[in-house]
Amino acid sequence: MPSDIRPSLTVFFPCYNDAATIGSLVATADRVAREFTDDYEIIVVDDGSSDHSRPLLYELQARYARLRLVFHENNRGYGAALQSGFSHATKELVFYTDGDGQYDVFELRKLLPIMQDGIDVVNGYKIARSDPLHRIIIGTVYLWLMRRLFNFHVRDVDCDFRLIRRRVFDHIRLEYTSGVICLELVKKLEMAGYRFVEFPVHHYHRTVGKSQFFNLRRLFKTGINILHLWWQLVLWKDTPIQIAYLDEGRRKP
Image 1 (tube, helix red, strand yellow):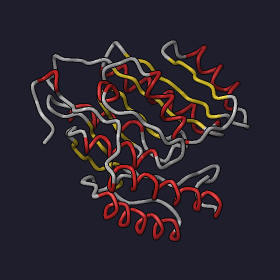
Image 2: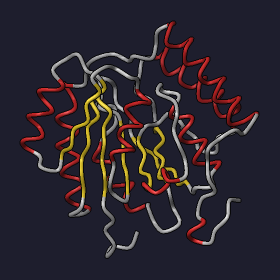
Image 3: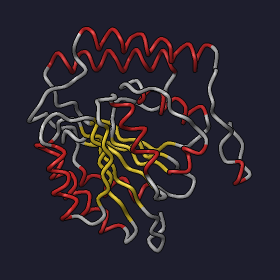
């Protein structure tokens, strides 16, 4: 990205019982965004947290003028939180990562210069996964299976550290309200012909809370959703994606 061009920027975080980490993420996002542009916003989507996230977020909003808050009265799921974040974003570039602090928002500084003309998504990938051994094994098997089921070109579809041009959401519609949305998002962007660049980022051990993903009921539901998504996008190619780049005279490859 040329140094004299400073696009506007949205930074958003899905938040579910992340009161212990969300404050430092907002503070870091504000610092990094101010270094990059004068036109930015920070959004936190609280997905029905039951801890003290909501009063903390109101306190943060009084301190950070660019902070906008979106509240789900009930827990709708990770995908629903991402959908709300993308729909409320108003700036040219949209960056998001999780509210649990397992990624370093300061590394957004490395992604922003990569977003040159002709690039639509800067997709992070984990240098190493900082999780217990069983989660590393499950995560490795999961990524291997997803790459083969969906023929992904990105190496780490499960890394929620992404910088995306907001205009892409004029061409794709996200439907899933669970964590399957990550598969849906990347596959639809690839199918629409948007151009990715990948960049390594650090992944850190979760210091508070626990993952909501690793329980049998959730795993079963996720498996059903993955099969449905595979049927929709790979087998039938039944997708609302429109052809990208029509306004620039480009065509889908």
